[in-house]
Image (cartoon, one colour):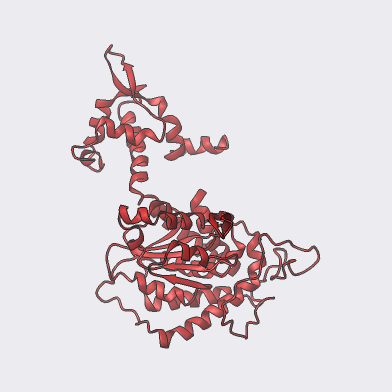
Length: 414
């Protein structure tokens, strides 16, 4: 049953919905007994306190910590609210709170959201086995501070490979971990699905970052002031806000299950941001537009932060420009292509590696696209290693389409 909004939910109980719930025709409740159905949304002005609650939560967070942007503050607010609706979602987005150095506010942000998320399980250095057993069929919210101590060096990261696998698997529902357990040594399934926030210095492993809403913290500038967070004084107020948030999400849980909102991004970014956009749509007010704006701008920024992936996209666009500057010939010699790439002072190729981009380095950057050099005979009769232009057409259309490429792809269902 939904929480009574006048009664504090001291246990911070989650919505009692099953996956997936079954709507009973003609009834105002799901078969699971949770909230109104999709056909019976809360009409505006009829007790839907969602916009005001999210505004209040955003204000509370900003009181104690300065986020790097308004979009980041909006994203954290929606992520916290989404933790109270985890049983409704297909994906459990991570919140990666990272910064370049100490004293950027990472731990303080974790302090605040710990008091407002659903069923927090916080740790600084827990064993993988302990975290396995903390995730139940009713997902908690995992909160890991000093995550750089778990993944900061290759040697340490190798020891915590199981934990990284758990965090990756838990991003999607129905990805249990199998372990041999019990006196009969039988395989046992452990649930992994749970939202998680991880804070640390420097980026987390790529596979975790790719499943995360990334908050890139920075030190406060002179003149930027925040209130000191004192648990004895401030926690009760945050818990009251958490309980009101839990009561509201409990009432909308039935609607959240069936939502498939239009998204401004695609693929994994859409999977990761969808729970936040669902919350925004159910809240209404300015939040649907606010959420999609944050999603689009923050996803676009992170797309350029993956150095390896970013360089692989960059090489495609720069090679296309090289072909275009030569009149789009059928092929370019490798030596000519490398010279043109290194001539661009704004490109990274002149300083790539120890002596600039080499034929071997170029081949490695193009490997994932299935593009290889070959012996080519050129119109002047010379023969040399080079690249045929038509070998790039598919990769250009898929990974860095121009307007014409995008239109062709849409028209063919690509």
